[in-house]
Length: 141
Image (cartoon, rainbow, N blue to C red):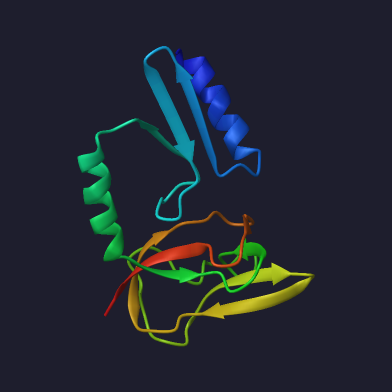
């Protein structure tokens, strides 16, 4: 499979509502997915042995997330010309606003429920998010 085909598949996944796309060509299989623990919207991986999947599952158990309480559009700041509410590396206190979710033309401030450090922002500004979708990966303090 050549690079142009792979780039085309990435574009298809990015511009659709698909959460996962698998393609098999000969003895090579490529799986691309939008997964809740990834920093970017698309993960490209070649099929790996089962041992790696077990290690990955163990690592996921230790992670904490700030998730979306509603379906809406994610905004990292109150306005386009102001800094984001939080960024990677910020240590925040419980009750602090971390983002805004727009739903039905209503702007909903999303607050953190516990003291933590932001490890990763998992969604892009103005991205549509689903109920329960992780928005930030955090480390509890």
